[in-house]
Amino acid sequence: GIKYVSKHKEEESVRELFLSLHNNLAATLNQLELWDDAIISATNVLELDATNGKALFRRGVARFKSGQLDEARVDLTTVCRADPKNREARTVLASVSAAMQAQKEQQRNSMKNMFSGKKSLYHAEEVAARKAAIEAAKREREEEEALRREWQDECERLRKERAESAQAPMEMEAAAAAVEGGESEQQAATPETEAAPEDGEDGDKGGEKADSGGDNDEPISFEAFKAEKKKRAEEVRKLREEEEKARAEHEREERRKARAKSDVVVVDDEEDLGDAVRGYKKRADGTTTTYFDRQVDEKTKSMLDALKAPKRIDAA
Image (cartoon, rainbow, N blue to C red; front, side, top):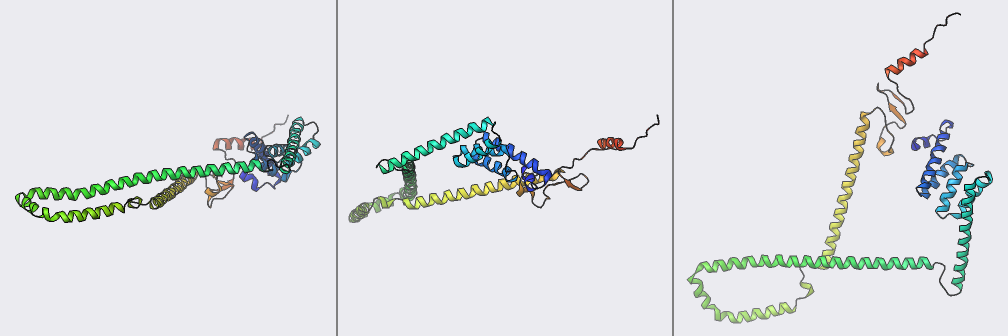
């Protein structure tokens, strides 16, 4: 309703409705402690009626609660001057004056401390900033440690897979050698002595490989694992965004279908209206009329026609 009325607020017939709706909305938003929204609603009223006492009071309260003490004092002072008997406005104005006095005293003490070598004027903000930076660094370290643990687990899994894939051909060769029988025994006796130097050489090579081992022998580097993890997270994020977009589009389409079955166009979302005529609805016969035109059934219509019909007046 507010969306429609806002477009026609300059019209005299709609003006009072606009003021009433935004005044009530400001009061509700104050109760919900949504101070910024309450200020906006009250200001909408005051743009058309600068002396509206309810809007001034409600904006003054919202400004006071949101820390805008100077602006709150101006609004509440205006209310008290226009209505000196407004006890509630005087009470809130007294609270605003007390808060302003306390704020001045605090600033005065801060200036004293700053020039006396004690805490600076922005000591609280500086402490909060340092604390936030420490917490952020701590979270970053914890995330890094958790990522390293995941990387180590992944390296262990890849090493096991590599060992299992290397073991399979060896087992197949051993099975084939056992099937050969006596021929394999004769062949094993002859190269056994010749193979000794080769084994030694292999041992040296193996020692060299062992000496060159270390962290660089991991199946996947930490940086590569980290980049892959980030890439997967980005893919998941994009997938969720696409799903959310598809879900919103589906809901929007369902609302369009539901409105198509009704003869009334419900204005709840400007985006959903599409090419529809805003502020109007369709009658059952297909004609277009305004929202405020009420349709009556045939029975009611006949009764109204009967009342409108001229009546015969009998002479006395």
